[in-house]
Image 1 (cartoon, helix red, strand yellow):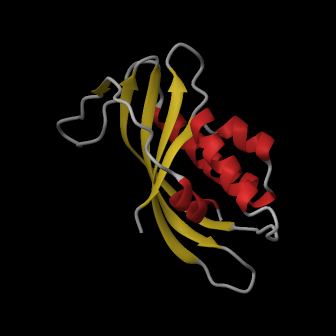
Image 2 (cartoon, helix red, strand yellow):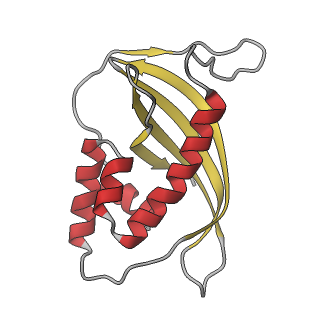
Length: 157
C-alpha cells in the first residue's frame, strides 16, 4: 500500500529553502488563499490525486506515479517498488475521503499546499475498512497553471 511504503521510504533531503507562510484568516484560523488560487479547486484536485496515486501504486504504474509526484518523491517510490517487485499487486479501496487545506506557502518558484486527509480504506476484500489520517504536501509551479504533485506524505495515525 502507498501509505505504508511512503512511511518506510521517505527521508528529508538536506538543504534549507526560503519559505514564506501565507497569512491565516483571523476569524477562521484557516489559511488565506492568495489571488489566483482557488482553495476548493486545490482540495478537489488533491482528492482526485489521492485516489489516482493509490491506484497507480497498487498497479505499479510508474508512468502515472511520475506524473503525480515530484521528481524526488518519484525516485523514492521507484526504489520501493523495485525492492518489492516479486510481491503480488494489491488493490486498496478508498471507502471515504475527507480533505482539509491547512496552509499554502510560497517556496521559491512554487506553491506548497498542506492538505490533511482522513477517512477509511480497505486493503483487501477479506479485510474490513480501517481509518487513516495523513498530511500531504502538494507542490505546484507558481508561474503555470497549477498542476499539484505530491512532494511529501506523513501518516498521522
